[in-house]
Length: 352
Length: 269
Image (cartoon, each protein chain N blue to C red):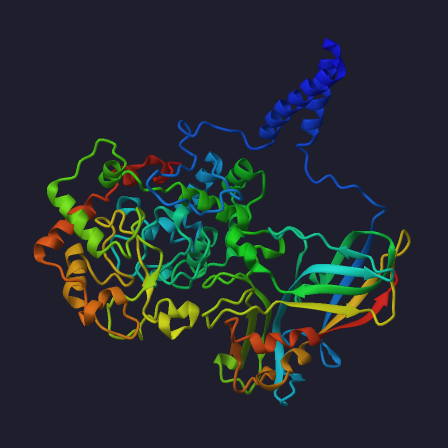
């Protein structure tokens, strides 16, 4: 009897202790409410898809990524940093250029997209050629029109820099290498979550109210735009031809990746978060204002083989919109502007 | 009683602290076997960047080679008594992936460590990178993107790359480029293809004896000429098709890869 009792107790003890020590094996747990370097899932967003299990965010890793993001060391002639074409004031888009400028003032072929809510995206770039955030910077680094540099050469430069040797050591206890460089940049971008617009506070019932015009805009948006600009990310992540041109000799979009004729002229549906700030619009930056964008959908849609069916309902091109409806939609879109995001000191130029 | 409980608690704590340590290997009188990958063109040893174009393909087109590199992974060796040793593979690229580069002689020796002693008679390996790990983010080791074989415009790895020059090529500077990649079929996609090849080579009745005294070296050959020579569309012509990149476009020539590898000889060492 006595022995059995002790055994049960010992088993119970074992259970409690083993659970405690299982936790001790994992990374130090920090209260996510007080640590600004922890990824947080906004309640109104779809679940994040980034592989955090391989690359959890840490302050040192994040700060390394931030240093790299603002450092022209990534480019062939040390002239261009990520931040050249991705500026915080406009949600990390390029406010100046239709086509951003790379090394030696070379012109790119597409408009630099905003960097925000990257942890929720499954595909990257206008044509979706990249399927994991870690690999996104490789395109910018190796493109002849952007940074025109080899990944191996960047790594060599970082290894020669005492400051980076120190930073990699602090973050990873390793010499600079490509994996940890890409991990650090991912950490920096993963924390770039924009989820504090007036709209967010409104839908999360955090005391924000929308005006009647904005609410009208919201209803119109749901009825006429949200089939593509879906969820609170305001994109369904799909590729669509939105009727910008009747043919696509200049840029065939998604077809470049899949080599399928049915993907000709299709581009990734962009998120509309901070859209007030991310002009110019479309993959080629052809529109300067949201008014021009809505004018296009109302009256400028071109037919072609791959035009999205939602823009050709009942053989009528485009989305019928009155001037008042357009104005209300624009008012609604402006509620997606996140001032906290563009002022967040964590993402600004490191001062050193 | 209290003492017993304290001892019990203490020992449990100890057990669980030690359980935090990972990958403790029990060593079993380890031996070593080296696979040496020798790249040839027909009867000749491959020389990179020759001044002339000394080689000819099956179509009689002269060529030279400027770059040859390929990934080997998932290596298994089988002993005469049927036991199989699998070289450990880590999906982050830190173990079990090997990039053979003609320009780097060290890379041509793949050293398998911690083999049980035995007479090995057969090797199986994969040419390619099962890039399902690409979904897991940036990798290290042979799969480090800095190696230059990561496909930036359409994520994945080029796992068999050969470039060179042939006078009959109509590309810039008469260059030819064959970049074989592609790790999965995607329904409806014209570009996706699974070009990964698994190859088994028997040692032709020879034995690679691994034991305390011997660390044998098995010489395998890759014949570039055989890689270019296949049936139909797989018969490479530099004149008509000097550049192939997308996985689907490489499907034919990827089919030539298995026959291009052969067993040659063993040094008992």
